[in-house]
Length: 206
Image (tube, rainbow, N blue to C red):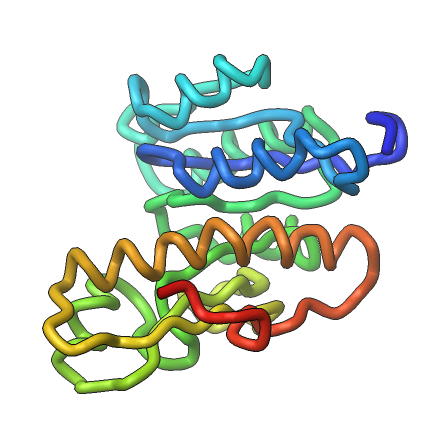
């Protein structure tokens, strides 16, 4: 699919950018229906910026520590995103709680990936909490972003088994591998207007 026919995606990041890399890799396929047109980080010097540079994608830093409050940072971030005229804004490890004004402006275009099977384990430390709860299945969720943290409607989910002897790190690695499959699949589904299958139906990432 030519660049002119692809959906435009801006990816806000805060860290290493492994999910960003999964989206970049997917966008490199000739028939991928989306392209990453910009990466915006709220932290300078993170690995995600290097990934963007290596792929030739425009990358911008808007350091949240330079703003007086959350509202002014979100306004600057929102304006920067708007400059790239995106069809979708795909948060990828963006470690900021967004204000209602931001989520309202991008309503219907703002998505996120969360390392748990929502509505279970919203917020942080999801793998530790899953192990403490003794669940047999864990995973990740791509969802629409709303004003409530991790409360937006679910777009797609990928499930992985919790194995005997799992540690927080080993479970996190298994979920992350599924995230790298799920996020491009869900974004592709949105761009093509087709439903996203739960990736548990496509085979678990062991």
